[in-house]
Length: 247
Figure 1 (cartoon, rainbow, N blue to C red):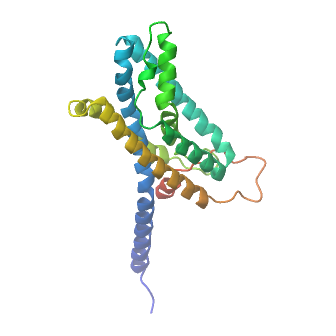
Figure 2 (cartoon, helix red, strand yellow; figure 1 turned 45 degrees about the horizontal axis):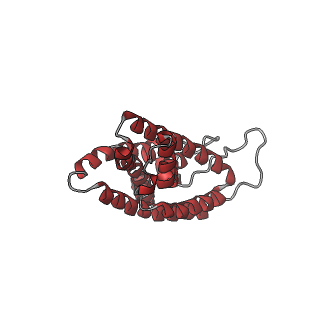
């Protein structure tokens, strides 16, 4: 006639397990997107730098210029991720999808022979322009994936996502440059460039689908907002399942 406390406890554990399993399953595509973006981000640097290295004499200045370019674009990606959070989730997702679609025009990431120096140009300027024309927008968008996955910092927000969703996939993907060294004996730089381009096209499809799905499920802003502590403008497209999981 009366249910035992143990029965209630078992039912509660079962519900929590089912809920956790569902959230983890929903979060896996987001983790895969972050891993793939980080993997491509690390892998493209040696691929594109080694393509143009013989054109400019193979000096250390070529590597240094490539490093300056990649770090500058990475910083620009972080700034973009911060600025677009002010647009709201739906407009942010649409803007990001438009840029993702436009970045496909850069594929494949094979440096054109027309960028080879003729002997009277400034090599640093030419290298920067070559990199911007060959990999600029794809690299820029890849650099925004991890910043966009971080949770807001407003009242009531929790911060497990950088640890659970960003840090682990990124650390694993950091092995990509070593992987390129293992692949070079079997594949030339052209084949690696095409392979990278195919993986990037898959990333575009996955990231666009998840961004639009997350934006469609985003809750509308509350009707009444407190003036004392306004909500943080940071709107995350790729993190909500991980935040829910960590609760």
